[in-house]
Length: 253
Ligand code: NAP
Image 1 (cartoon, helix red, strand yellow):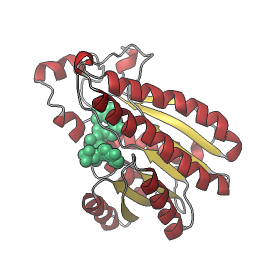
Image 2 (spheres, protein in one colour; image 1 turned 135 degrees about the horizontal axis):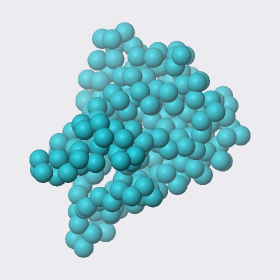
Image 3 (cartoon, protein in one colour; image 1 turned 90 degrees about the vertical axis):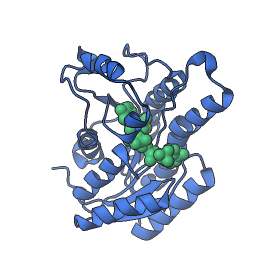
């Protein structure tokens, strides 16, 4: 099960953190993986890691806010491997800012990367996937996406972007079902990545977070990547328009 041989995947924001884990996991199941992020050099290191494990991958510089670059990179991936089957819309930022201090530039940067970037990468991918009547788009939102009772301090721009991802996923799943493209969204809880360490949360804040998590620990990137692999696979053929939380039980507590 979950065999991805002969599939081509593209992962955004894949130089580190969860994106890197998704790229490694997809390659581990046999997919050819386009490792993309703002830093080409860092992507190259992930490609080397995949190759060292016997997988196939290549690196591209891709800033998801740049429409021309999206078009060019997706085109080059298809030129190299002949098709595109799987997109993991993972690139995202979290720059904490209290709502009363939020500037238009703060708001636009977060929404441009986290929400607009995911939409236009999905649109470009769908044009390729439709040609083969098969595709899997996996959008990465967050437990902080609204509607589930998790408000996060200093994250109004972030939660708005992640809530938007859930909404657009449900619409795209409807629009693209006739094209053979399944679109789903993953909402990770607190996961151990550079994003979390760079947010520099104090021990008290982290302890307060974990008090709400029945499994009593922060998650690993690989634990989210396992869900990505399932949603990317043939076995997820009857799954679309759905949100999957990988949160250590946080929402159940
Ligand atoms: P991360 O370690 O910061 O990785 C995110 C990657 O995206 C970074 O390499 C970043 O590059 C890249 N990126 C930023 N702007 C970009 C752009 N315009 N175009 C392309 N790539 C860009 O974060 P992570 O924790 O692995 O997060 C991955 C995803 O999961 C994000 O969407 C995040 O919102 C979501 N998420 C994370 C958590 C968590 O607890 N970690 C929880 C819920 C959801 P730079 O470093 O150069 O900015």
